[in-house]
Length: 362
Ligand code: FE2
Image 1: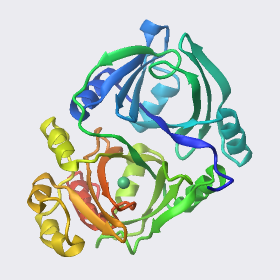
Image 2 (image 1 turned 30 degrees about the horizontal axis):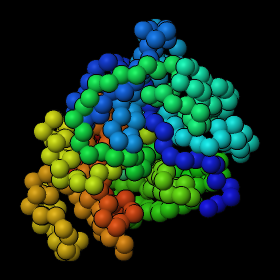
Image 3 (image 1 turned 135 degrees about the vertical axis):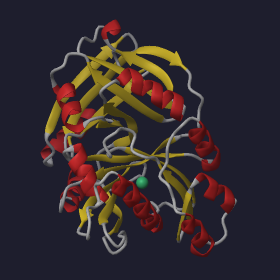
C-alpha cells in the first residue's frame, strides 16, 4: 500500500450527462438489466436537472439531463454529446482526499460540503481530471438512503444480466497527453503503473494507440489512459477526441462471472457489439490454448479471449452507445488474468477500423 495513496474505497457511481435522461434510463434498464433505485428532479425539489440512478449488483450509473437550456449540463451536452461527467469514489475521508488532491495540483471543482436528508449525511467534494471529467469524493459512512441525500427511493426492476462491478474505466487523451495524465494519477492519487503498452503492441497497418494502466494500490480501481499514436490513417483515439471535442472516458468495463450467459441476454435485448472477423476464431486455439468455454459458442457470440502468464480473460466491446463514436462499454470475465486483453487489440482495432471506414473517418 503506497503511503501517498488517497484513501479511496471503490467506485461509488459513474454519472453520465445526457441529452434525454428519461429515455437513456429506459435503454440501460431494458438493454443492460439495471434496476432504477433512486431519482431526483422537480418532483423532489431539484429545479435544474433530472437524475435517474440505475444499479446492478455493485455498479451504479447515474443519468442526468438539464431542464433549463443553460448552465453546465446543457453546455456539456452541447459540446460533448452524451458522456461520462463524474467517476465518483467512495472514500473514508472526503476532506482529506480533496485537500491532498488539490495540494498535489488537482483543480478544485467543489469544496467539501455536507449533503443531508432524513437518511443521514454524506460528505462530498470534487476535483477535475482530464477533459471536463471530474472525480467526486463521497464519504457515506453516516448515510443509509437509497443513493445520496436528496434522491428519493425508486424500485423499477430490470432483468439482471450478471453485471457485477466496474472492472476498469478508460480515458482517451489527445496527442502526447498520456504521460501527463498517467503522472497526474501517480502524483495526485498515488496510483501506480500497473501495465503499459505502446504502439508496437497495439497497431494495425493503419492506426495505433499507446496505453498505460494506472491502478489504486488495492487494485480495486484501475484507470487505463490511452493516447493516439501516429499511423497511416486516423487512430480510433483521435476519432474519439474529435467527436467528443475533448479528452474523456472512452469505455467502462463491467465484470461478469458468466460472460456467455450475460452476452446472450444482452444480445437478446438489442445491445450491439463490435464485429469480430471469423479469422480471429480460426487462430484462437493456437493463441490461447485450452480454455473452459466452447470455442463455437464464443465465435457465435463474438466473445474475445486473451491469455497472460496468470490465466486468461474473456471480453467483448459494445458499439458506441450514442451517435457520436465516443463512449462504449466492455463486458469482461476474468479467469486468473488481471490484464486487459492486449492480444485482442489487434483484432479489435481491425474491427473498429472497419466501422470507422463505414463512417468515412479513417
Ligand atoms: Fe478495457
